[in-house]
Image 1 (cartoon, rainbow, N blue to C red):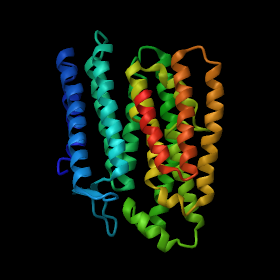
Image 2 (image 1 turned 90 degrees about the vertical axis):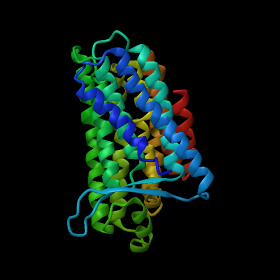
Image 3 (image 1 turned 135 degrees about the vertical axis):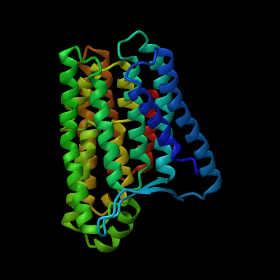
Image 4 (image 1 turned 60 degrees about the vertical axis):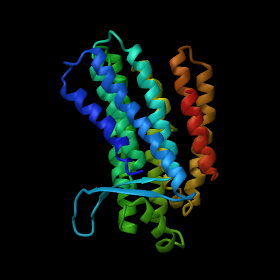
Length: 344
């Protein structure tokens, strides 16, 4: 389990090599670096997962502290990785599905201009998502969250010569930024009320300090929901996902299956202890999911482009996950996330 940090390091190194090569690598070398880094990441995840399941008891959490980012009075954010059942499941989805998508992309993108640039972007995409999943502090989750958003913008607009693709990328970037503002407000409220952004400490302090319920906690959970709605393309911030199909097909697979839209589901599942203290917001999570799954399903019926049909089907399936989260079926939501990632 001490190798956990490599799951983030491998795709990050792949991105650095490809980005600073400035396109000098040929297709073969770019594919070896791009696909190989994610493959090593997936193998490391498998190794760490076997070690975790065979060593630690059920419900245990493995922590790995890497460095302290800064120290400003009592504010001392430390980059620490946390591995438990939830993060291991997500890590397996991100790296496993991500590897097969990269493998397919090495053939699909052959002969395209910007072959090396494509793998630089996708490696950074995977690194950002792994960073988001393993971070033990909401501040670092937010950094990974923004990294995923940036990569989606770069990849949706990969064929930037076409103005429509650039417009689709900009639309996705702007709409998801609306959700990101909500998420940032939620983090500010949580830090003001509980004095920390460490996820474990938040879940321990909240039931004690806010045992009788709190309007501030409800506001924080509402803002977290706003962030999740934007990233997971739920109503009313769902408009970007259908246009996001403008990118190459492997990009659509990454966004719909391994990264991006699953981040909102993961955020709510990771902070579900806070949502349990704000049941009215939990009901709103279920309501948002229920409305989205119905409307997106009907919208898919009238589409003529197969990629837009897939986009609306993803919205609908993510709506099922939100509905499951809202009624407290945490394990069911994550199980559906995992199965959806593989069949999508």
